[in-house]
Length: 101
Image (cartoon, rainbow, N blue to C red; front, side):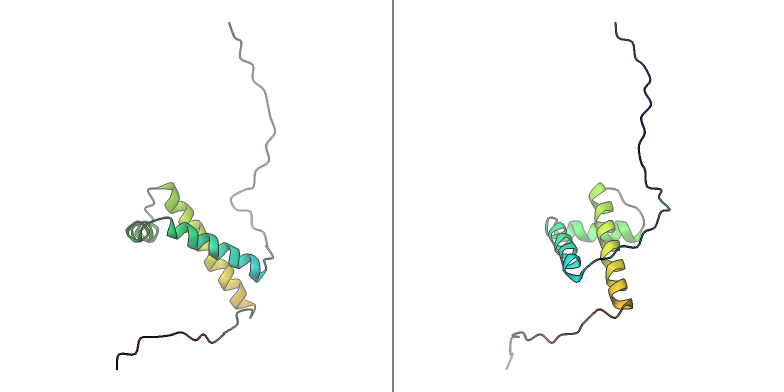
């Protein structure tokens, strides 16, 4: 026969209302963008569209959709901070386009 005993353990938690300032380089932000891109590529276009609708409607039904929302919020907030601190640069890109003439 087993006798169960209560044991108290201490755990450290971060309160949901906790806020920190996080310094991040543009290089590390590019890694977050790549992570987001790979996450999105792992799902079909239909799945992503459905997920975006769930996010917009605040009716998330699947864990991965919650994760996608987290990535989108992180990307948006980082980009806003880079913009607010005048750290976004504009570059010209050349690309080939089909000439219909």
